Image (cartoon, rainbow, N blue to C red; front, side, top):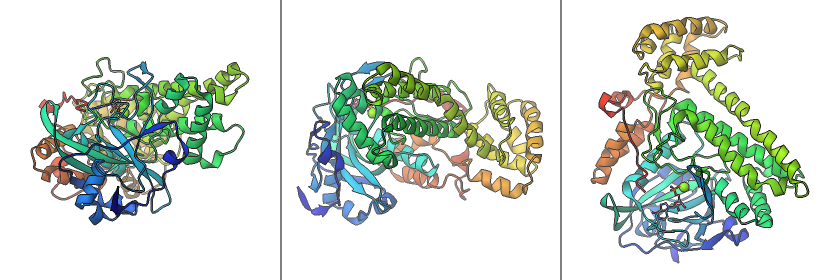
Length: 492
Ligand code: AMP
Ligand code: MG
C-alpha cells in the first residue's frame, strides 16, 4: 500500500458485490512514468494533479502500487464478439482500482487498462502499448468535447517495459474514468451460468447506481431495460450524427450507463458512406457506420435475454413478450434521437413532418459524391446566411446539392428566426475539428517515437471542436486523397 498517496476511494462494487470479481493487483513494472495527465479531469475528481504527477502517482496509475483505500479487482464478464458468444471474457488486462465521488457527487470508476495478467487473461499477456493507449486517450477526449457520453482518460503511463506487438513496443497503462464498467456482457456472464439470484443482485446494483429513481419499483427490471435501451438509442444516434464508427460493438463493449467505451479500431468517417468500415478485423462490415443502430438493437436483445427471469419469474413467456415489445420500440427511439440531432445540425427549430425526408435526402445526395461529412454540415451555416457556395463545393457534382438546397431554403423560410442566430446555433452543433484519421495517425506515430508535441497540439484543438482556432486551419481539412482507405488495427 502506498500511504502517502491518498485517493478518497468509496468502493461500492468491491464492498457489495463479492462473487462478481476477483481481488487482483496490477503488475510491478520497472519504470512507471506519466506521459499525459488530464488535469481538468483530475480536478473534476477532486484529485491533486501535482500528487498524481509524482513518482507515487505514476506507480499508482500504472497499477504497480495500490494506494491506500483502493480495492483493486478484476471484473467478470462474458460477451458476444462479432456475433459469437464467449461465456468468459472479463478484465483480462485491466483492474478496477476503486471508485471516486467527483466534485458534482457522481460515482466514477478509476480503472487501469494494461496493468498485467489476471485470472481472465486467457492467452493474452495482460498488457497494453503506448500507441493504442494514446489513441483511446485522444478519441475519448474528442468525444467528450463533442458532447458524447464517454469514458475518459485520466492519464497515460508508460511502464518501462517492452511489449511484443508489431515488434517491441513501449508498454503503457491507460487510467480510465467511467460512470461504471457494467456492461451487457456482465449480465451475460451470470445469465449463461443460470445464476438468477446473482443477476438480480447485479440488476439491483446497476439500478441503484445508474437509475436510482426506480429503486424498489415493482416493475423495475423492465423499466431498467427501457432505460438502458433509451440511453443506448441516444448514444448511437449521437455517434451517427457526428460520423463516429465504434468499430467493435461487441456486447462486452456495450455499457449499461450509456457511455461510449473501449476505443479500439474506432474512426470518424471522412466521406459520407454508410458502409464505412475501418477496422481490419471487421471483414464483413458487421460494425459499419450505417449498421450501428441495427447492431445496438441486437446487443440490447442479448441484454433483454438476461433479464427474462427477473421481469417475470413465474411466466417466462410473459417476460419475453414484454421485453420483445421494448426491443421492438428501439428503432423508433433511435430515429427520434437521430432526427433530433439532424434537426439541430440543419438548424431547424420546429418539428415538421417533412424533416425526416429532408434529412435523409441530404445524406442520399452525398452518396458517391465524395462529400466530407463534417465539412458539409459546418458549411450549411453558410447556406443559412445566404451563401450555398461552401456547402455545394463539397460535392463532385454541385448540381446534386442545389436540388436539395432549394428544398432546404424553403424549409428554413417556414421559421421566423434571424439567419445569424440560426447559423451560430448550428456552429455549436456541427464541429469544425474532429479526430481525422490521418491526423490521429500522425500524432500517434510521433508520440510513440518520443515527440509528444503533435499529440498535445491535436488534443488541444479537439478540446474546442466548435470554435474556429487561428493557425489550426489544416486540422479542418479533409484527408489527403491517398489517406481515404484508412485502416485501424486493434493493436492491443
Ligand atoms: P477488448 O477487445 O479490449 O474489448 O477485449 C476483449 C477481451 O479480451 C477482454 O476480456 C479483454 O480483457 C481481453 N484482452 C484484450 N487484450 C488482452 C491482452 N493483451 N491480455 C489479456 N486479455 C486481453
Ligand atoms: Mg472491451
